Each structure stands twice: as structure tokens, then as C-alpha cells.
Amino acid sequence: MEQQQVKKKKPRGKARLIEGKCIACGARCQSSCPVDAIEMNAKEEPIIDEAKCIGCQKCIKVCPASAIEIYFTPEEQKLLDELSAAGTASSVDEVDSKEAARKAEIAAWKGVWVFVEQFEGHAHEVSWELLGVGKRLANDLGVELAAFVLGENIMHLADEAFCYGADTVYVMDSPLLKHYRTTAYLHGCVTLITKYKPEIVLMGATGLGRDLAGAVATDLKTGLTADCTGLTIDKNMRLLEQTRPAFGGNIMATILTETRRPQMASVRPHVMPKPEYVAGRKGKIITEPFPLKEEDIPTKVLDIIRAAAESTVNIAGAKIIVSGGRGMLNQENFKMLERLAELIGGVVAGSRCAVDEGWIKHDRQVGQTGKTVHPKLYIACGISGAIQHLVGMQDSEYIIAINKDKTAPIFEVAHLGIVGDVFEIVPALIDKLKQSNARPVE
Ligand SMILES: Cc1cc2nc3c(=O)[nH]c(=O)nc-3n(C[C@H](O)[C@H](O)[C@H](O)COP(=O)(O)OP(=O)(O)OC[C@H]3O[C@@H](n4cnc5c(N)ncnc54)[C@H](O)[C@@H]3O)c2cc1C
Image 1 (cartoon, rainbow, N blue to C red):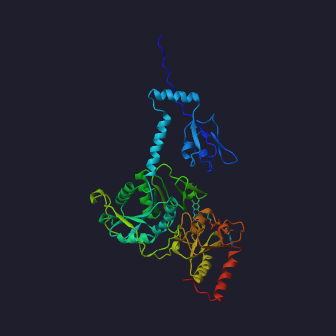
Image 2: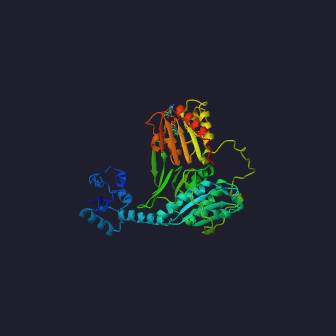
Image 3: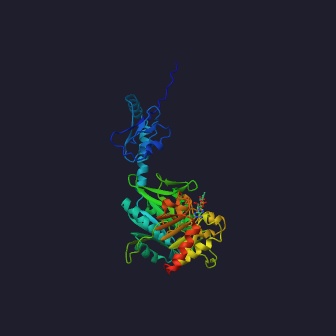
């Protein structure tokens, strides 16, 4: 009689906690488990349900303290040994070696890089702001902070980058990079990044930065978190924590790029403070040739047509802002805010409601879909303080809120809250300023 050969299945084992090693990191293991086999106890340590565990090892990979291991019953171990002796590599070993290779690949990426955006040799301010936050990230990781700049005749920007904190500047200087063209800048950036392997790359969320960052991240098959409002380091995992508003601004999400490098994030202008300029600070310059020829670049710049001179004020750079919301009731009442702003040397801005009502122009809108502002003084008049508004102004140095509703969320970020009618308080303030002959702040 013919004997049927039964194929033996390789056991996957079960996950178990190694006693005393859990650091209660916040239930990363639980959220990684695809079969809900992990519950957390009162000490925030995992309780692993053996019956449900499928031995996938996801919890082991995310554990920052290596506090979970795979174990096999004696029977499973015997079977593994047999299969191994029969020349069948254990699937666990395969996973382990793949995992080790992945970790080694990730460990090869080191350093924090900031893209210096420039136009006609002038750097965009956001580049220096990013060097400020980049320095903090680099210090937390114990690595170097570098800037990288592409363009034509841009060597002077390397000197400027050193003064704002860069240790090294990578320069790609070519006539073909004179004007921004996505293909050219994309190839330049990807060449630098793949050669020098920085673990973090930061770019400004400007028009140019948004175009370039997306193209670079796609080419490198890595993650990009756009419009971050916070950047920190998880020191246990050596990961960049990229925080930004999500779901229409109703929550703040912290996003990690765990398995790909570099970790890429963009930040809007004026979200991060500009670091101190240290004149004469020096560093290392590394130049790299531009890899393309003109015929490789499909876009040609025929002419540059400049926008008509801006008649409007740029609220993003204003030191004092008087901002109005729906509580101002109509456009006429904004004149009161203009008068107040004039007296204290400020500019008028507003909430999205004020813009939607047509009381002020869109370029004066503060918030998630407007501008991020960082003034020394922000006076919010008749603004409730929705999260989408707060993300654009909560880092102002001093916030005064005037609102007749004492529960309005704007009071949670205000340094001085005035519960009252804006139509009584603002005119009283104007009178007082006029009487005191106060001069506008320079
Ligand atoms: C995806 C998305 C993006 C958004 N982006 C933005 C953005 O960039 N910027 C932004 O601002 N919003 C944005 N919003 C809208 C945001 O959710 C709020 O609707 C908006 O900020 C509310 O504007 P407001 O505070 O002027 O109006 P309201 O929320 O209506 O508040 C009016 C306030 O005025 C007070 N008030 C009324 N009368 C007086 C008075 N006489 N004296 C004193 N106080 C008075 C009221 O108590 C109230 O608190 C966005 C929303 C979404 C979904």
C-alpha cells in the first residue's frame, strides 16, 4: 500500500513577556497585535493570550525594551530541530535574519538634514527656522546637523547656514539648478540623500517645498509628514515623532516612519522659532556635482513673470496682530480693530469665519488653512478658539482674548483673558491708548 507523506508545518511559537523588562511604553505591543491577543494590566504591562497569539512577532518588533520573546513548547522545539536537520531553514530564523538586515540598513542612515530653499541666492526664512529645530533633534540623537542647498552661485548660503547652526553643508552648484525645476532638484536631492544617508530630512512647507518633498519621498519610497507643528525624538526607538493636525484638525496625530529612511517632514514658515545667528561660525562644506544634463530635464524656464508688488501685509511676519472672528458681526466693525492695530503698530487678521463672511481677505486668515503666526502680541476679538484657529496662533508670545463666553476655548491658550463684550472693551481700549498718547511699537 502506498504511504502518504504528511507535510509537517513549521511551528511559529507564542509571544511571552520577559519578566522585569517592560518599561510601560504606552501599549505599542497591544496596538501592533493583529489578533487582539494582548490586554494591558493596571501597570500598563501586556498580558498575552496564548490561545489567540499566532506568533507573528509584530509585538516583538515594536517593543522598545526587547521585553517580549518567542517561546516554543518542547514538542514544537523538537519538530523545529527535525526540520532544521532535514535542511529546512526555520521560518523564524528567516524572519530573524531579514529583521537583522533591515535593522542594519536603518542603522546606516545617520544625521539630521535641512533643505535650504533659495530663490535667486536668497534663502527662505523657513530654512533657518528648520535649522533651529534640526539642532534640537540632532542633539537628542547625538548626531550631526547638516544643511543641503542646490542652485547656482549659492556658496554664500553655506556660510549663512553655519551661522544658524549647521555643522556641515552639502552644496550642489550648477547653472542647470539656477531656476527651480522639479526634475532637476529631485535628482539633485536624491543623489545627495542616497549617497550620504541622513536619517531625517526636513523641508519648508512652502510652494516649492511641498512640490519637492513629495517628489523626493516618492522617489526614495519613504514616508513624508506634511505641515508638522511639532517635531521630537523618541529616544528609546531613535524615531522622529512628527506631530500635525489630522481629521480636519480635530485631533493632533503623531506619525512615525518606522521602517523606511530617511524620515521626512515638512514644516510651514513661522511655525518654529528662528535660532540665534552666530556670526563667524564655521563648518565643513561638501560639494557634489549635479548628475543630469540639460537634455535630461523636460521643463524649460523661458521667462519669469513677477507678481505685481504685494499691496497686502504679510501677517506671518507681523509682531502685533489684532484678530477678529464671527463675534465682530460685520465688516464695518472691523474698522474698530484697524484703529486699535494702528495705535499699537499692529496688523489686522481674522478667523476663517471672518474670511468666509467676506469681512477680511483670505491672506489675513490665521489657522490651519490660513497662515501660522508667531507675533509678540496676539489680540483675539470675538474668536471662539477652534483647534483649526489655535494651531495657527497658539505659539504667539502673549495672547489676549476678548470673548463674552467664559467657556470659549481661546481662554485655554490666552495669557490674559477678558470675559466681556468686544464692543465695549475694544472702544475703551482705543480711548485709553489715545489718552495716554501711546506710540505704536516699532
Ligand atoms: C478643515 C478645516 C480647516 C479650518 N481652518 C481654519 C483656519 O485656518 N482658521 C480658522 O480660524 N478656522 C478654521 N476652520 C474653522 C474652525 O473650525 C472654526 O469654525 C472657526 O475658527 C470659528 O471662527 P470664529 O471663532 O470666528 O467663530 P465662532 O466659533 O462662531 O466664534 C465666535 C465667538 O465670538 C464670541 N462673541 C460673539 N459676540 C461677542 C461679543 N459681542 N463680544 C465678545 N465675544 C463675542 C462668541 O462667544 C464665540 O466664542 C477650519 C475648519 C475646518 C473643518
